[in-house]
Image (cartoon, rainbow, N blue to C red; front, top):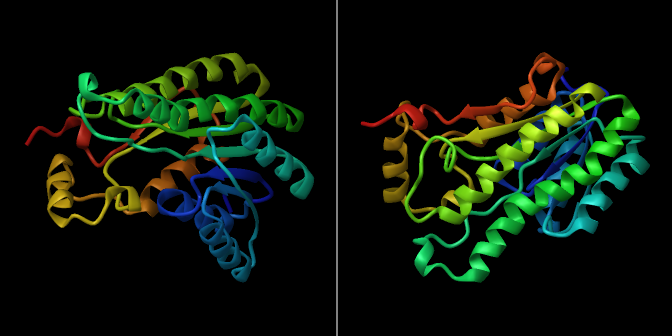
Length: 250
């Protein structure tokens, strides 16, 4: 079991990549604190994990709030005795459109959910991991704003690129404390965020060298690697798991 005995926080855990990661990490021995806004979906995931013999708890809330990040860490410490890792996965694309036409409120919302949440997470997770003698943090970033620029996604690209910059600095600052920090860059994934438009899915599949979109479990396995001791010498990276999207032109 790659995460046996480790306590992990997962945000964005109510569906998609986060929910898939929760079930996978629990099967790999992790004790989990799950975060998202939707209570019913969090309860369902926790119940499924418990039914399979795993250990999980949850707190519903908004990753845009500093107090919520603090509460997730406190729950990990109070329920499971400490914190060993975190998969900071919550995010939003926001409204799609060119910057000159974008509402200021959309810009700030996308920055808040995708980037500010990462700051709050690190602010509280790192001191908790320091108490344990080390740990691992993974932020879900994106190839958008890193290897390509998709028209209409300026806010999303800026926020996700900001996460990579923060990842690199955190890794440099806290490497001596045995705290690893990495960013994970998924490609198109079949999650609720991808919607249900079959025509859109067909277009997105064509962007990838593998000519398909990822299943959430495939991205969850990449996060599992980064959080596990198998990645003990991996820190400060922007790990691409995008099915060849970044290198495909046909």
